[in-house]
Amino acid sequence: MDLDTLITTHRRPLERHLRRRVGDPSLAEDLAQEVFLRAWLHAPAGLPELRLRAWLYTVATNLAIDALRARAGRVGGVPIDDALLDLLDRAAAPEGEDHDERLAIEAALAQLPARERALVTLQFAGYGPTDAARLLQTTPEAARKRLTRARERFRRAYVETGPDGPASKPLVLLLVRDEHPQTYERWLAGAEVRVRRVSHAQEAARQLATAHALVVTGSDNDLHPALYGQEIRGARGSRLDDDRADAAILRDALASGLPVLGICRGHQLLNVVRGGTLHQDLGEERATRAPELHADRRMHAVATGAHSLTRRMVGSRAPVPSIHHQAVDRLGRGLRVTSRSADGIIEGIEDPRHPFAVGVQWHAELPEAGIAGRRVRDALADAALRHAAAQPVAIAA
Image (cartoon, rainbow, N blue to C red; front, side, top):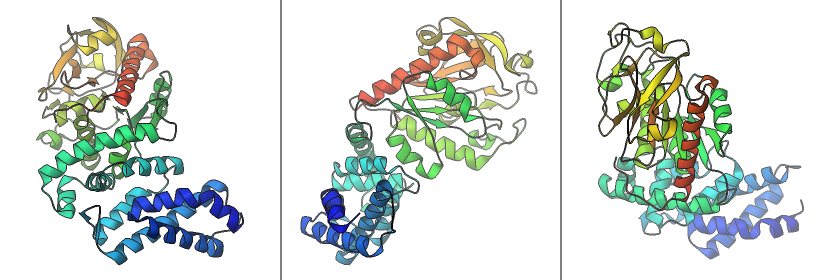
């Protein structure tokens, strides 16, 4: 592409991008000219259009950061230091990000007031309210309240500016550890949703902010008992660091009002993050006289409680498949039991204060779950759709 065509095609979008970074139209124009000069001198030859655009925006972002450092002042009334600028840069252009989606994220962030924009961006970089408060010279409680409002503003702006526009299918995140994600993806493919795996904990905050629901899947490894204040007795293959990371993601999703479905380990994690505990081994703790009822994908019936979301989804009684040797023991705060098996094991929980926070001990994603599994999936998809269009609501943490 020759220089004239490059400037004609990319000048206005690049200037808008730079204005959002530096807050000064004249400086943005000067920086855009520098971008094109560097492209003419140094851009790799033969780049396809999408890769060339990504190259231009990377150069533009780096130039904007250098310009802000040179000014070493304030952006939108927010004090900016080198550490914060580095964080903003990394969060604005995460490695491997789809370019169109990244631009949509930037456009949505640009609609926020400067202080709230900085708070959201810092969280996308993996920093919490305490870190944001320190960098933005406010209190953690003030940062937390501002962050709640800012994330909701961002979410609604992103719905309008996202790569597929406001009419796109809702996005469901899949938090999966060591089970086969394809099983869950095939199950969710039967609903009108898009599915994306949570890549890793460092990007989870940004992914949650652009999603409309979260599914926490089962696992071959048990939750580490340290999460609920116990030593290992019957838990198998526990990995505390992974469990803590997943618990943080789930807490974040619940606090923001995101629809959440926990399956097997995800169901147990929902109980644990609300302060509940688990039977580490149903047989060893004699929590049931028939632990074999819950193993090897064996089918058994669950009875649901009246006036529960679970009953509305699957009816008063349903046959379901199970693969577990642990189960909910002490119920977490704010949760209610919504279904049990014939031997008394808790098979379903939910938070009645939350738009959709449901845990099922059985495997709704397996083909054996039949109509019960499909109804749970469809209810999640409906909740995701409502979340995508919802007005801001106050959610209890």
